[in-house]
Image (cartoon, rainbow, N blue to C red; front, side, top):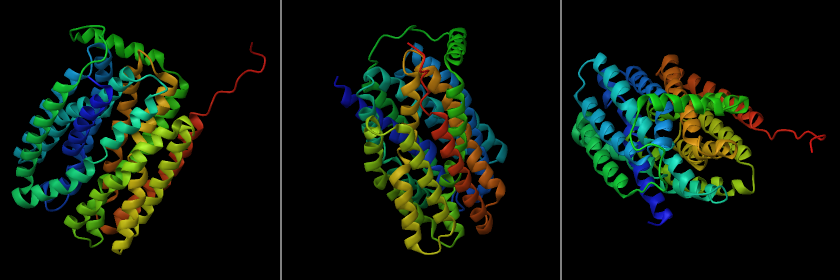
Length: 398
């Protein structure tokens, strides 16, 4: 089957997994959904715990993708993700929320987000074609927030948040199984069966393949991830606290996905001519500016300015991160390396919303949290640029 058609199937999978297991929670955290039943801070912390577990599990899923392939891993993740949404709909007590989201949804995230697909992409495409392929994938995956943020709000308004979670679980199951059935592993893998001890050995080998440059960049990107995911997760609730209607805000945020489409394709694609680390640094700094705008928004034009600026760059951040990493670490260990890095990405996605929630979820506290995120993001962006600078060549070397 044509490689580019495979990219389309993978993008459909990514759109659905991110939409149902991630973007939907910017609506579930509001007062009109699970945030009203358990408290916005409680839902944010439970979701953060799920992200943290997904990062731990991702260390192993990268090794699994290297050994037995990504397709079965992704299909299993879709089934588990659908089950986790159904269990989420059935939660009645806070302890159940902290059981279901980390232990069921967390592993599902690790198996269905970008990392297993990145492993496929590195097998489908050689280095010269890889930036364009990443650009096409992220372009086609860019409508997830546009579809699922307002769709979740519509489901919540019509069915309540529990009914909305059940319906989203059904969508994930159907699309997830259908898309993975159409994917093909482009090459034979090392082992046809999953062996836990072999996975552990593969993870250890992946750690040995890393170096100080990898760890410095990974830590810097972890900090950046925490900062921008902190305010992105809370953007609907934060604007709601400033007097904006949550349903209208969700619809406005959905436009972010459409605005991001050119950047999703162009920024990774032009990395063959402009350094991917430069592009990543610029994107992170612009995200910081968008956080400052959201922190002070009192009029709708400011909301639209936030949506526009955020949308132009946010969709390119993760593929640029993968490109920066693949430029140094592509090869047979790439799944393990990107899986290790995924742990820190997930940790950042968990820490950011939790820190913002810890500062507070009233108007003044959100303002402080968003501005702090902007400052941290600028510092982290500069660190990402510095850590991946080209190594100096020894003039005495042959």
